[in-house]
Amino acid sequence: MDARLIAACLLLAAAPALAFDDSHAAWDGLLKRHVVLAQDAKASALSYAGMAQERAALKSYLASLSAVSRGQFDAWPRARQMAFLINAYNAFTVEKILTRYPDIRSIWDFGKVFGNPFKDEFFMLLGGKTSLDGVEHRMLRPVYRDPRIHYAVNCASIGCPMLREEAYVGERLERQLEEQAVRFLSDRSRNRYRDGRLELSKIFDWFKEDFEPREGYFARYAAVLGVPDRIPPLSFLDYDWSLNDSRSSFRR
Image (tube, rainbow, N blue to C red; front, side):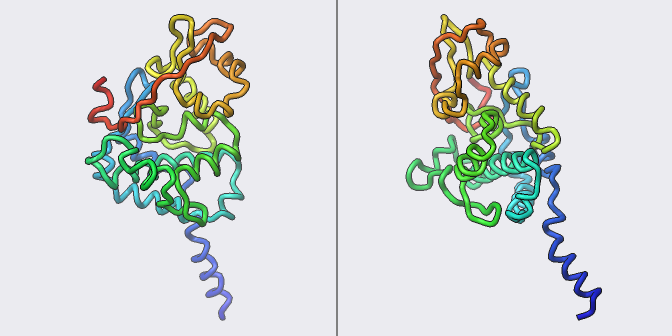
């Protein structure tokens, strides 16, 4: 075979890998158009109706994520990997909701045993079929061990830390994660100091091992939480699993 033809074939084979946009511009644009901020940007909701109108663009972005190989991913620096996985979790969650929208009030409408939305392996990522739990609990939490992951992944629910109004990007990830932490911890509907107790999101109970030692963790954010230097007794608030749809999320 002619050497030039061989080179052209190799270039074509590499094209999908080279084509991946690690600025996540397509997802970034969708978020900027359809995320609705509230409570001084400490909370957000999503216009699923708007996302539904641009579902082809969402599907194209999801296809670009699924086309990334494990080898390509493994060659990336840590922050770029984390941004990729967080964006994938959030974008595939939106797609999951859109499969039933507008006839859905909670992500749990898919079912808790049969059809469980977090365990359903409904998409391809890094060369294999996986689920939302697979991304969060196998690819993200045990590998990167950063508790701020919990402030970045969004489960399409009002009780969840807000869906950020832009894509996560490797070179800005540290700032983005820290801003998400401050936003969530200063949201008094989900984390507050009252009557001598620190009332926290149920996330800090479900995933308590990610925030150990807890007293030291919350002391770091004492000013944000509005608590004294000594961390008071903790209690945990009920979690609101209602859909974070901009049509209804802020009517409460």
